[in-house]
Length: 132
Image 1 (cartoon, helix red, strand yellow):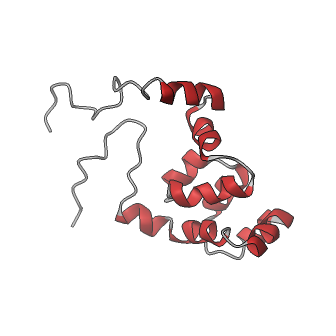
Image 2 (cartoon, rainbow, N blue to C red; image 1 turned 90 degrees about the horizontal axis):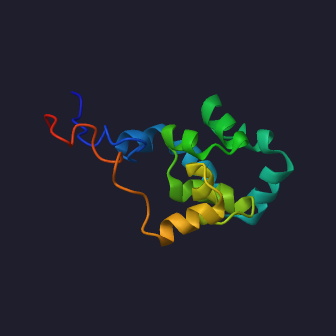
Image 3 (cartoon, rainbow, N blue to C red; image 1 turned 135 degrees about the horizontal axis):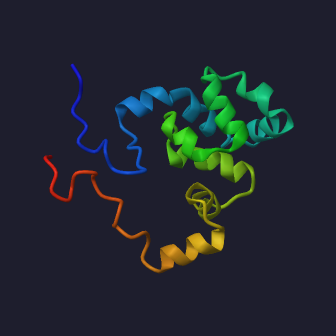
């Protein structure tokens, strides 16, 4: 039985629900392993070898190697777990978020200080009169 996901048509948004959680379980476990200094050092010494210790998909591993956070979110990554990769790389959450939006850190900060993104184009696809 398919679960109704009324939130599935929000442009540019992946909701971390039970399905995403299952899909990203090992990816998120890998990220949490980076909370331990020893694991961060092992990862930084040979990223691919460390990733190969985890039961992640090849696409997830490549997403980590490319530091493609948007891709990792679509593959089940939770941003709060993915932040451990950024921290391992010495990045702030703000720097990571900026990279996900195609903005520089300064542009992202200015956008957020200015009230965030406009809601125009960021609502449900059929919100302006469609059948919901």
